[in-house]
Image (cartoon, rainbow, N blue to C red; front, side, top):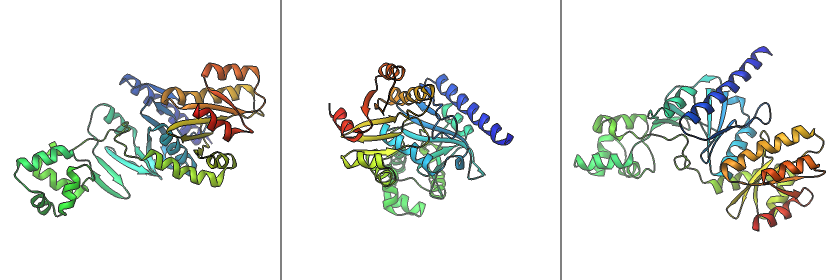
Length: 321
């Protein structure tokens, strides 16, 4: 029990440290504190990224990763996990790993990135690659008066591979990347921007629709919403209960649970509104028996109240206004 508590405190302190460093570097951040334990994410980086802080990637279960991806897809933000281990194995520094569609780095690597160091090696499906500056590669090849075929022969790859390196369609694996470095030097090494939405190549609409299909099979409320032509996903370990997209507009829903204490209900709504503030996502509160204190809090947050009984139809009408 003591070890578990110590780990929780350590992760909480790490999240505060990361948020502090980001702010010092000029980023706007917000710490997420709901729910109290086993959250899907911990830090919002305004208009850019959603960050989960963990000791080990296994601390976030499959639904937690799905939460992170669904919110990222609906807000068009890049998901990032900062963890010291992947499935009990310590993470090497200066390498970007991938777990369930989410980039994973350790704290040392993230701080190095914020300090301007190049992070260029990444893992994808068990193999390692080097990020190449595709424009510089083409420039250096032409300067050396080498054709695509000449370079392909020197590297031991196809002409098509070199063509794709130069158009940023793919990167060389470690072996072929080192051969490129031997030929042209460090100048051709690119850098991966961990917080950039454009750097993290993801088809947000395709992802949210795929997740919505899975969620429809699991949740009756989401199924009703999606039958109206929306793409919604149920969340499990964060303040919003549902996120989605309809006609290019993102939305989130907080389902108020009237059985819980008023203080907890207000806290949940306030935590959810942080997403709305940082990512310009349309916010709705669905519930029954909303007392005056909660209604006043909702009005201050500029969220819109919709009926839980007519959720799917009212949601569609509100978004179209």
